[in-house]
Length: 329
Ligand code: SF4
Ligand code: MG
Image (cartoon, rainbow, N blue to C red; front, side):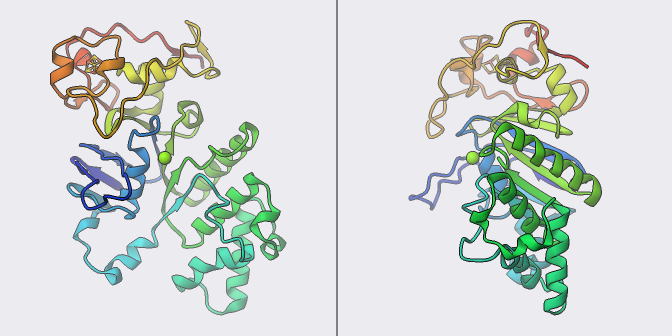
C-alpha cells in the first residue's frame, strides 16, 4: 500500500535555482495494492513532480510518502533504502531517451538484474532477460538488437521489461503512451493491464489526458496548479464529476462515449504555476466562481459520496448543478 499523506510539500523551489520544479501543495491520496491510481492535469499542474517525489527523485520539503507502512523520509542511508528501492520502478514518456543507444537491449534489461543481484551467472541472467522480453510481447532474440531498431511502441515494451527486471510491486508511469500513435497507445495500455493482473502490480499513472486513463484506472485524481482538486473511484469521477475543472476536462473529451452536449474546449489559459491565483487557483477560469470567497479562501478537501474528495466552495455550499456528462454502459 502506497500512501502519500498531506501536506506532501509546499515549495520544491528552495535550493534549486536552476531547475524549475512545480510546487505541490497539500496533495494526499492512497493507492491500494493491486490498483491503478491515475493523476491527471495540464502541464504545470505538478503531476510529474508528485511522480518524482514518490520514486524519490525529489525530496519533499514537508510531508511524507509512506510505502507499505514505511515512511520514506525516515530512511537515512542508501543501504537502508536499497531493499525498498527495488520494489518500485518508473516508466517515462519517451522510451528512446531512457534507453542507452550504445547498449544491446539484452544489456539494458540485464542491468537492474545485475545491480540487485537477482540472477546467478550469465546463463541465468540471459534466461531471465528472455523471459522478460516475452512477458512484454517481444522475443528473446530481440535482446541482440539495439533500441533504434524498434518502433516507438516496441521501445516502450523494452522499457517496461527493464522496469520489471528488478521485480517491482509498484510502477510509476509518467505519460507512458503520450508519444505513441493512438492504436499503439491502446496496445501498451492493454499490456499494462495484463501485467497488472498477472503480476499483481500497483500503478501510479500520470497523464494529461482523461480519455487515456478511462479504461485503466481504479481511482483518478485531478490536479490543478499544484493542488489535487478532486479524486474519486474512476467510475464515480467519470459519471458524477464534482469539481468545475474536472467537469471542464470531461466535456473536452471527444470520444469518451459522452452523450449530452457537444464537445467544449477547456476555456482559458493555465496561469503561471510560479504565481498562482490566490484563493482557489481555478477561480479566473471557473464559471461557478463567487467573486469573493473563491478569490480569497483556499478550498479545503471535503469527502464526496461514493468515496473520494473535492476542493471547491461551490460544491461545499451545494450550489453546483448536477453534472451534465454521462457515460454510456
Ligand atoms: Fe470555482 Fe470557487 Fe469551486 Fe474554485 S472554489 S472551483 S473558483 S466554485
Ligand atoms: Mg510532465
